[in-house]
Figure 1: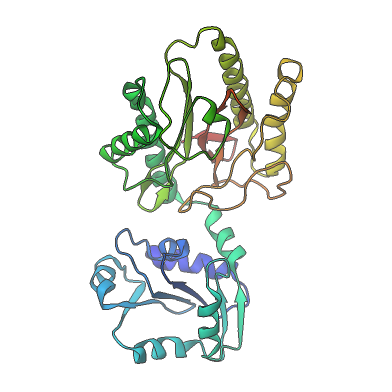
Figure 2: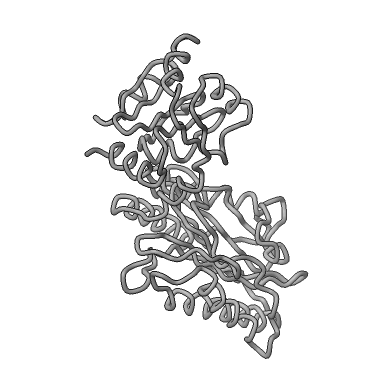
Length: 357
């Protein structure tokens, strides 16, 4: 069975009671479309993917048809849409059937279109689609690992570009160029670069802030390889921090210890909140509670085709960690007016624990 057949079968195993799963790309590509087809090129706007128990097919415009045929394996039928009648014929196949949709992506307007073709029932299978993608096979793990290797090497090289006066935007652009030269097919999300006090805000986007001597430099970035993402964060101290260095090192060491403790504790069957608590408790208890409440986000999330490819692992997360999942571990400390530290790695859950990719 080829790539498409294996992944279509896995999705249908999770979507019980459904005759067909219909994925609809409108202005953007649904990640489940990429998961099933394995396509690495093409826009595929206004394209339909029909996952059936006997046959999986896509219907796409003449603009994308040749690109689709070139990439499709033997388990995927490619149908050209050149008129409204072609769309009518393709969608008429859902009449009288139980149709699963990705309710987290499908627009209400398109939902109303599907209703006109009189399916017996339309079912939201968005949770089932996420669950089907959680456990990765060898090919997926290798691609995430390659993306992680690219990002880590880019992190190792980027410090050569640190200089007084460079802006966050300039450094982000430089990072993306290095990553691209190393083989990334594109950033998995907008590269985050934070200087100094801006590092206290976990999702600060780079702006015209200029780097000064003795400041934190926090970079959160990812690469794409074969549709699969990495997500890695490193924190640096640039130049001579003077009397601030002691506190900066204290924050860094505390986060690194929490990061390492959490990874060492990971075992299949644990709940996400258990892993989060290990890191949270260490940070909250360090230095007599000096940084209690300064770890302000979840410890991590599932990683795959999407950067957030499934549930997060927060203090309330109840989902269990399973062998073959790839997750991020990213504790942090954030102090308004001073700066922040975050250290993040991509981790494969194995039979006996965890492995940093």
